Structures are given as C-alpha cells and as structure tokens.
Image 1 (cartoon, rainbow, N blue to C red):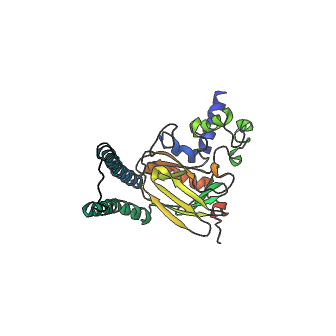
Image 2 (image 1 turned 90 degrees about the horizontal axis):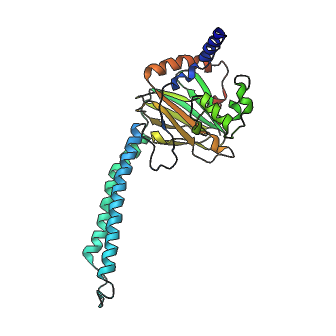
Image 3 (image 1 turned 180 degrees about the horizontal axis):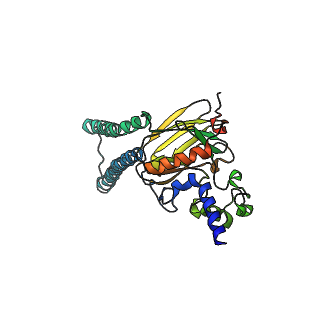
Length: 306
C-alpha cells in the first residue's frame, strides 16, 4: 500500500509540473474585504500610478481644506450680525486674477506629473516575454509567441474545469456555485477557499524583473484584460491587436478580471498571473511546452478578423 501511494503521488506530481511555479508563492494582488485603496504595487507602472495618486490626493485635500476655510471665514466674517452694512462693489481684479491663475498653475503641475505616466504606459518597449491574449465568451486564451505553445484559462469551477475522471471529487462540484466542494477544489489546486472567482485552472507565468508585452485582442465581443496590481488595463476588441506592458517587481500570485461587460458570464472571466524567478520560469517553460504544444492550432489562435 505504501509503495502504491508513493507511485500515485509521483504520477500526480508529474502530471502537475506546469503548476509547480505556484509552489511557495505569496498571494499579493487580490481584493480583500473591508479594505480601501489600491492593491500593493506589483510593477513599475503601478508604483508610478500610486505615487501620482498620492500626490493628487495631497493637492485636492489642500484645496478642499482651503475652500472650506474660506467658506467658514465668509460665514462668520460677513454674516448680517457681524457685517450689517453689505459692501457695494461687484468686482475685485486681484482676486479674480488669482482664482484664474492659481487653478491653471495647479493643473499644469498635475499635468507635468500625470502625462509622463500616461506616455510611459502607452510607449511599448521591447519585451523579454511576449504573450498574445485573446478574450472569449467567457475565458481567456494565451499564446507564448516566442515559445510556440498556447493554452486556455478558465475560472476554477467553470464546467470546463470539472473532470470526474481526473478528480472523482468533482462529482460533488456544482459549476459557478461556491460551497464546500468548490472550496476543496480550490484548495486542491493550491488556492485559498476565498479565491473563488479569482483563481483559474491555468495561469500566466512570467519571470520577475523582466519586461512583459501582452498583445490583446478579442474573438467574439469586446472584453478587457485588467490586472490592478500591475496598473494595466486594455480592451480586447475583435479584429484589433492592442498592446500593454508591465515589468513585475515581486514574485507572487496576482489576480485580475475581465473589466468590460461581455455577456451573461462576464463575472466568470478571472485572470491569474504567477510571477516567478528566472530559474523557475525556465523550468516551467520546459514542462509547459511539453503539455501545451500541439500540432493543431488551438482555439486561442483563432482571432476574429472583422
């Protein structure tokens, strides 16, 4: 019995080699109940966006405090009891110049910081890894352009991920319904029970500190590939090939979602990215190429042309 268990465990380990990049990774980019603000920045772009947001928050807070102070001053200084005789003038040139010029200067300052961030996002650098992502109703297809393989990525709990032959316990799983059976399925895949609607059966794996270029398109309707922790979001439009880029700075697991209403199962199109070391990525590429490479073109390659 012991030998049989050892053999079965060895076979299971071999069958799950492409998922080994998940081992030991911290889950970083996901929403949490009761919290406010951004997810932790997982890329250089996100760090810049967070810094810009922080700067603008300081500016608008100062403006709100200043305007509120002026209102209070006007209320107490110029009410009927404190100022029974109202002033008769209708214009005050210095004040009118000030409230015109100062907002212009504030907008110029904000623009001098925000426009470079916008241009940095839109200027696509040469990628160390190029991945084509295609949105379908309702899942994602990924092609590692330089590696010659592709795969589809479904929500864990989607009917496509339920296979009683490989996992007999799937007989108790109801598609798209979170219960004890679904929680166990998530945990068996290496995810926390509260990561339902976030985790996928296959994940995009990328190396840390490398430039990743995503070529984004759609096969049926408009989708949107969004990864909040990386500060990126790009519509996937049928017949068009758009690009985005990011450079992940910390190893871990990150979650995103389709962010364009695309039909009845729009809520079931999550994105999972695993950022790993270069060594782990190289090992993953070897096993992924063996598992996903196919002489026939997978569905991920079929892109609408109109």
